[in-house]
Image 1 (cartoon, one colour):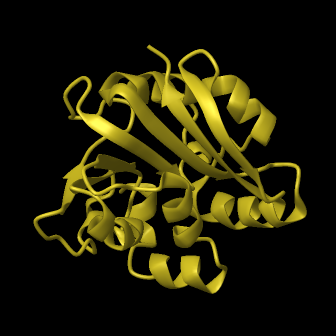
Image 2: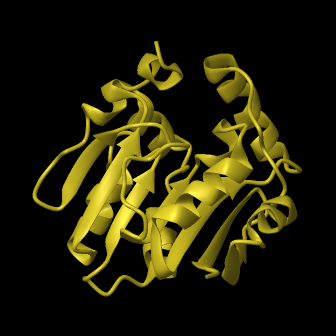
Length: 189
């Protein structure tokens, strides 16, 4: 059983209760124009995709948990895709934007993930990372609860995430909210 299969029924309620979805902030930073094709990696139940779908051409919700994907409200713009973030079933250069919201710290092979995102992005494609800085007490509390549910986690500081991405992406936007941060980078061809 995949780790998120255990929580799929209550996931959205938990995320909303603790204000962990940062949908408006993500929408503002992305500044979508309506023509973009997006991949929401680790997109789970599709909550973020549902809020962005009116502002883009198409959004793929990739997740390894088919139970999480079973909650996605599909339509002609929102497409659930079962799969592994390290071996995505997307063509090279097929995405305008890739989103990693509350995902990076779940994967040990983070450098491989960044390389895979780089592969699927179009020239000048963008990657948005929203994650939680390991230095703050709120993150330490989150880490404790997530560890109980999912096991080992790989939180970093915002500086460490910037360094992780610097060879493949030019950072355009960095928003530091202390316990969480957002980075918007453009593919470095």
